[in-house]
Image 1 (tube, rainbow, N blue to C red):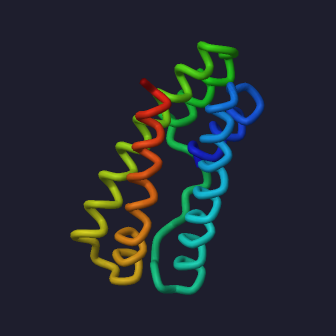
Image 2 (image 1 turned 30 degrees about the vertical axis):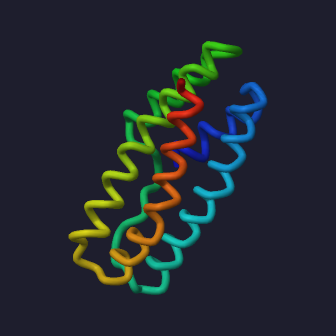
Image 3 (image 1 turned 120 degrees about the vertical axis):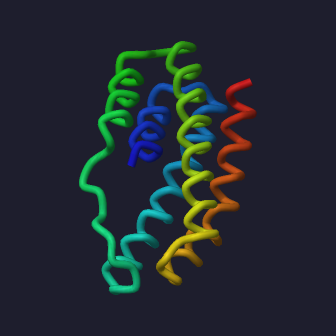
Length: 126
């Protein structure tokens, strides 16, 4: 949720490189969100879908909302690197050790895209 919401904001406020990255984040994360919802609604994965961002994510989004220009770009790039590090770690752990076969397979096949997002975020954050 954070990646999508913050990236939609970046599409409005970011420089051209930031906007290009943000569009990719919106497209890719909406796809993975839809895939995860499909696993849950089909009954293949039994998990509650989050209804809102974590308080930490909401705080990050609130901070971004107050920024513009270079300050916005710098914070967005930093946030994206951080959240993608967390996502890669989560998907690696679940892909390796998860207890639901379908969700485990999905995490393992989704992780390379997240790793690519992390590389892209690190490049932006230089």
